[in-house]
Length: 117
Image 1: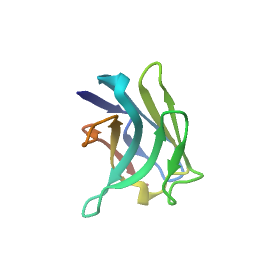
Image 2: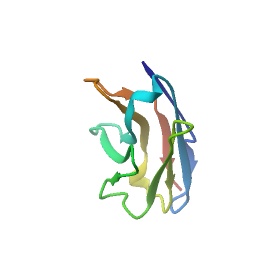
Image 3: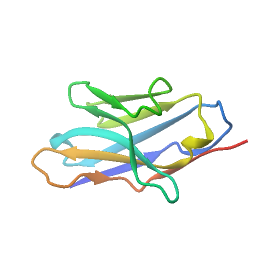
């Protein structure tokens, strides 16, 4: 079992910055990748960024160049540094973890990010 806890969400002005963090606990030695997804009301949940063990990263086209994902394998954490935020970035952001030999990913409870003037 893996537990994920997000932090860092809040209200920011357009063009502002925000940093999200996710801490994993439980069977952390089996985690293959961690990342961030987001879901706006009435929309499908979408990938924001992900980081695979070894350092490989993936970004959504809509955030590439503005968001940066980083991780600390020793501490089993992953962070998302968001800059140049737009109102379209408003969503609930969820931490995600994929575990070796598991058919289902793990999810955090989500943290709200609101970008508004």
